[in-house]
Length: 264
Picture 1 (cartoon, helix red, strand yellow):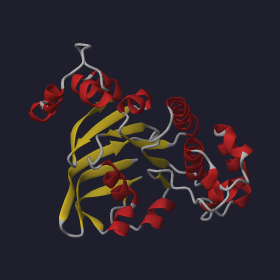
Picture 2 (tube, rainbow, N blue to C red; picture 1 turned 30 degrees about the horizontal axis):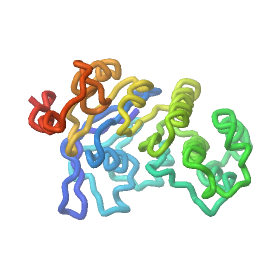
Picture 3 (cartoon, rainbow, N blue to C red; picture 1 turned 135 degrees about the vertical axis):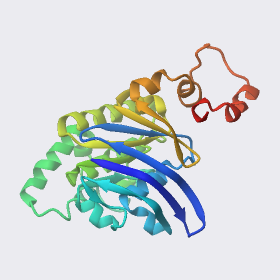
């Protein structure tokens, strides 16, 4: 469904952020894009959704295909019309609008108005809390409730692919677990493919089929989610587990930058 082929991304014609990034998202699959803050994850999904243009960014080399159509030269609204929805980092609700108004924003392109009501009920099925505060101003919702709202809003557009940027950011563990369970349900029940951008490797790999790890604007390792969960480097430096089961000193952590077994 999605093919990112060896792309480079440059901001303001000067700053190169991505270098030769390639990844794929199969039809109906969940793919995790992992990495530390500043690795290039958000830039990657902005390149896919066309939002780079709003930040003086540009795909200078390579290509991106969605559902067989090249999209790296298209604008954001045309990419969205092909069946792609992005849930941005930081729960970007329209804070002055009600929950109802937020949900209807993503229905503005749809001509089948009679079906929109059915899709609202579908959103309420996944997120029952949304129905209880349907007429509340969205800026007064909690962080977890806002995250539910923006995912529900993206579903209203009936996407083939959803781009989720850090959905666990700032959430309590129980709320994060609930949202991840719903994401998995959406994938299974609706057949929506998902590209999941996360720093929380443990949560992402628990629901993903496949994963990529980014570092300094490059993909440094990729494989089946199960394989990545068992990879000692991933466990040690992204999930926080060590094969030895012992705490590491700061000196040993610094040694990581010289180690990088996956780059050798």
